Image (cartoon, rainbow, N blue to C red; front, side, top):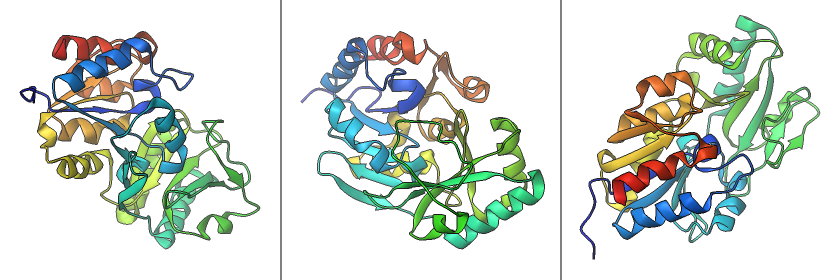
Length: 268
């Protein structure tokens, strides 16, 4: 067996980080991940997408490892198709949080990611899905969002930008939920105290590793908790300013093999 490298774990976000705009991984990045694997490092996917929104993608990529999904609410074994860990958002707390946000900023539009490996994304009238390729169903009324257990709530405002909406939401929801900004048009509410950092720590424990031995790659503020848990954080050139400011290093963009550039240097 090879001697474990300085970084025993490579934790990568998907959208805007590992994946190009067309949801593919470049040949160069695949090769760089192979270098890391040959050196003894494990690859850990860490994404805001829930399991149903990422399962086919992981299969297409030939990924068989663990995946932290749903902003840390799920730890999924892609090889066996099993959920190893899952946390749901209390639906009464979620509804109360939405009410507080609307009292602060006016009407918002919401969607939910349901719990489980086959949960659906449900959208109330007026909500626009930021990723058109993700499976989703339109409801007739907000009350239908709460019919089944949910992982998280996605919130959009007709006028406020993402940063402003996330700031206003954090100011009022308190311990009802954790507020996360995970992408363009994607402000989310998830179980209080749960984030990508928590998910990475749990997945690392399953793998028998310390998250401090991880090198992490990301592009949005929802990756900040992951950077805090891991030993080294790399922001993409296309990353949100908050993540760039917190990173140990800034690499090229997700369209320009930014992950590969760093992995080649570390493991090549």
